Image 1: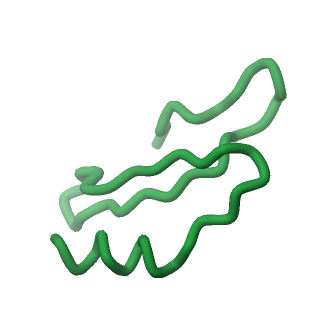
Image 2 (image 1 turned 45 degrees about the vertical axis):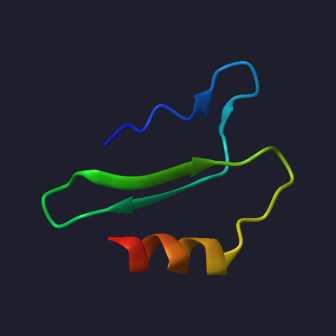
Image 3 (image 1 turned 180 degrees about the vertical axis):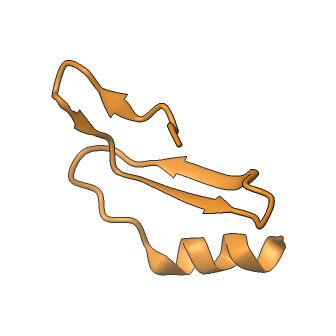
Length: 50
């Protein structure tokens, strides 16, 4: 599955987090700036809202 986060100029994916439901629908997505580490608490909050 392609999420559209590949950076052709850098030759690598952007750092990102996705929550995908059982039907394969993206319910949450967040792309982070280079060098940024996603906070697990943010992902847990997003899960609670679903």
